[in-house]
Length: 95
Image (cartoon, rainbow, N blue to C red; front, side):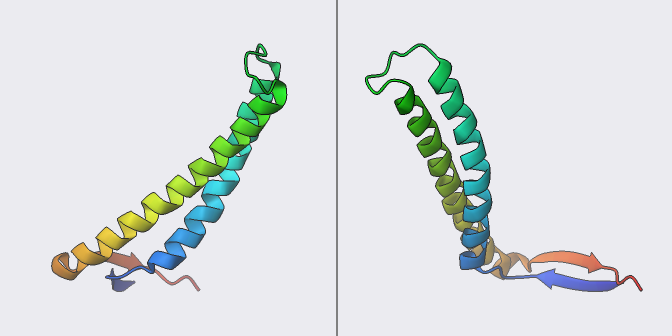
């Protein structure tokens, strides 16, 4: 059993990972919302294409928002960990 302390996390790495994961999940949900928008009553000026495009854009904005929020929280963690000493972790090595 090894003990470590996590004291700093790369904000750029968290942003890149969160952006990829957020765009993937947001894109999937956006496509689903877009398909729902195509079968909904055509009350938009763009018709069913507007519902699909809006759903996909909503999903992409979701992915970007998640990445920005996670990068902000990582930055806050890096500031606080200087005073709190970080997060203790125990890692076990399997043979």
